[in-house]
Image (cartoon, rainbow, N blue to C red; front, side):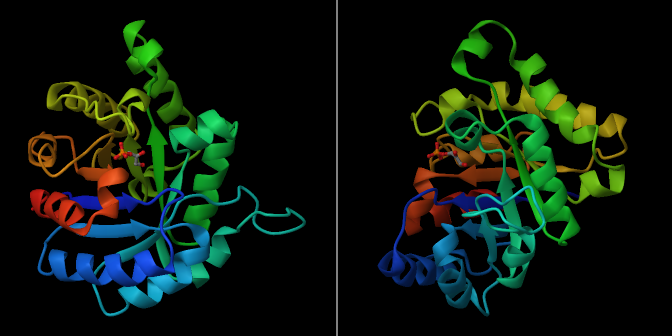
Length: 246
Ligand code: 13P
């Protein structure tokens, strides 16, 4: 049985004041929820967020990590540092990183390897653009992104990962993939992982998940929860999404 996971990606939002207000409200709201819940604030707030989460069942996550273990890499953050701050999850290869910061599959896979080396869970993001979907290339694009990960990891390592399918056209646009569209890609990803002995890998959907569409997405057989952007900055909305994963 795969446990559902709902992970917040705050992106470049938040402040100390937001943490002081939002995290206690989320802790209260998700009390007793059976799904795993994680919150990924910007790097500089990880320590404060970790303190605010202490004693709760909510895990801390980061939004990015260096592909290098340590060294002269100005401005980078190593996986060991995130581990030291008690991060359990690290998002790698978000489409914003791929599109805006030039990250390619090879780099994203190296990041995932660093996260695994430090005993944390990479949340490996994949997804097609609108042009790719309209060209009928969705499965080819996602297959190639997943293939890069599969080529680098053993089945035991793969099972320690979480995969997030986030169609680029659905991120921050209010356009959500239909449950059927998402399920098709999730089943495809699971099939590829199954060929490598990792059928039970958790696969999240991300892209305009809200309180009012979460339940129908999470009801699909291969959707194991969500990676939530905008809606994770509102305690009531995020809490309702976590409850939809029950
Ligand atoms: P939105 O939920 O704002 O569409 O963002 C999704 C996302 O990119 C999560 O990583």
